[in-house]
Length: 382
Image 1 (cartoon, one colour):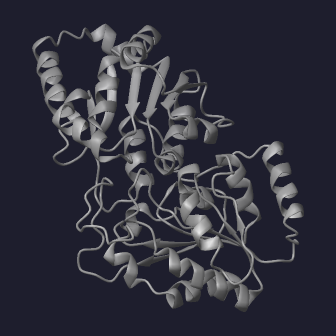
Image 2 (cartoon, rainbow, N blue to C red):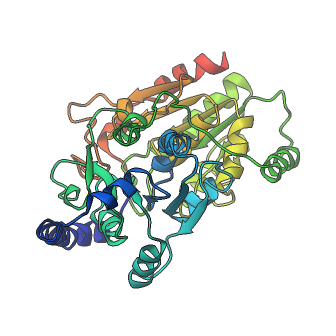
């Protein structure tokens, strides 16, 4: 889960005491009848909580699918952000989609009225999501237990989050805990005709022929003022120029609405004209664009996982993040990693081992040269 400093501050210094207090109250008042527990073992209503990160939502799809297949008669709901809801718009495994937009009081009242049998918290460290799961009143609450996070007290079933284990498999450990088959680990995107038509119109407008190698660069790799996973933007300029010169490629730059500045900075400095779509694409439009692309180059972020889910080759640039844990879940990828002793430093997503440089990036990201990225690209473009 991605966060800003203020959110993390309140989550830690308010969330931890509340989590411990509620767990003590639960322990002292534990009078769950066997009949109620039996009802919880055959759920009629299941709620997934995933409040923010698009990448985590994409990587959790095999787990959501496993629950759908194991409990075909149950109603599956998801509480999540607007971006994630866009991605899940055509997901066949979800019956109800609840946008996280209410006041806390309204949200808790609404969730309690739903009388969920199971609540599955897909967040890794957030105490807030664990408190929400507890507040639903569900008989069975499942979530991750992570070192020093003090959130697992609020779950009836706590599943260890294993550092270094790929997040797809960490999520699937929840499905395994609930007795589901975990053999199907494929990711997925659901692209509609409207998104395909948008992509085709874009290519026509930009005069990108089907014979042109199309390469998408997604330079930003962190949100809310946290760019330490971003490869230096001047290197994206050099990379784009080299890809055009070597392969006659057409370059498209993408990014979220709050990432426009970085992509435009790069676009203005490339020798050849590039297409800058930062801030102009919805999630499933981006997925449609990725399916047309020959290659996507990105740091560790949601669109990197979206490209992998779309089946597009990905060159992924990792510095603070562990590629074994957070790399694209596909066999069509090359992960480039930093060469400093403290890298990788992230497990849950916020434990950076260094201060950012003046441009916002991490020192480890600067150990990855343009030549290394070009060599990786050659595997898919030669």
